[in-house]
Image (tube, rainbow, N blue to C red):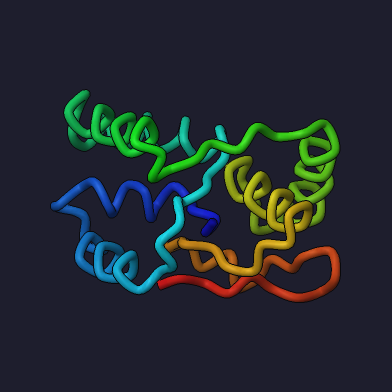
Length: 136
C-alpha cells in the first residue's frame, strides 16, 4: 500500500485542482495496490472536498473507500503517542495532525513512500533518520 496524504486525495477527486492531472498520472505508475490513509487525513480531505465541491466530491471520496481503493488505517495507541512526539519535534514548521499520523504509520509499518503534494515531507525524518520518498 502507498501512504496517501490529504492533498493528493483532493487533487485526485477535484478536476479543477492545479495538481489533478499530475496526481492522476502518478497513480498510473503506482503499484496496483490500494492507497492507505489515516482518519486525520480522511477527515481533513472530507472537509476540504466539501468546501470546493460539496457533497458530490465527498461522495466520490466515500466511493473510493468503499471500493477498497482507499484503506483507512486505525491508529494504535503507540502511533497516537508518536504523533504527539512528532508534532512537538516539528512544532516550528508546524507539523499538523494529518502529517504526524502518516509519519507514525510509516514508522510502525515500515512504509517508505508517501503520495503527497506537501513539501514538509522533505523535512520530516523517520525514527531511523531517513525520509519518506515523495510521490509524485
